[in-house]
Amino acid sequence: MARSSTVSRTTRETEIHVAFNLDGSGVAETDTGIGFLDHMLEGFARHGFFDLACKVKGDLQVDGHHTVEDAGIVLGQAIREAAGDKKGIRRYGYFILPMDEVLALCAVDLCGRPYLQFDCPFTVERVGELDTELVKEFFYAVSYSAGINLHLRILQPGNNHHMIEAMFKAFAKALDQATTPEPRISDVLSTKGSL
Image 1 (cartoon, rainbow, N blue to C red):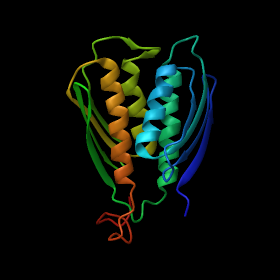
Image 2: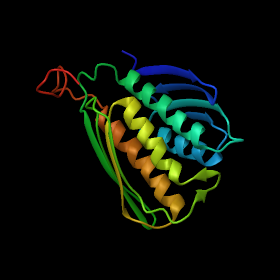
Image 3: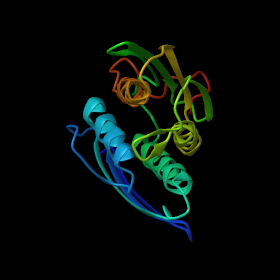
């Protein structure tokens, strides 16, 4: 069974189209209008072995907030749809990822209950064309739209580019682990019988 989805969302602020495949090979085609966000989404796809197409037309003449937040909303919806009923998957995933001087931790639970815990000590306002405060907004939108418990923490801070990239890649690895089929699970990994 294909674990993929296509989601579109149009508002007066953004127009977004996302195609997502959990069982891909790491191929990404991104065009968000924010070069650094494109770079992060490409790294997310590559390191999670997901296929991702993400096209965003946003009101960047205002600022990047709507574009980044809404991209997170639609990606979260695509993840949720691709994961389906979550039968037979591991549900939990975690990864500690080094990137030069930086060390990032990500843990996820595909429990259906959204929550974000985010701890990253940014020291600059922007990396490329991306406002660093929007990184938290992106992951908040993903967690709530996907219905996942998401913890992101920088264990060893450093270069802001490295911190953001390490978080995106750690999230990719943790999500890949959580969505991996587990042959010992015939239903869902929950005593309630549903996620």
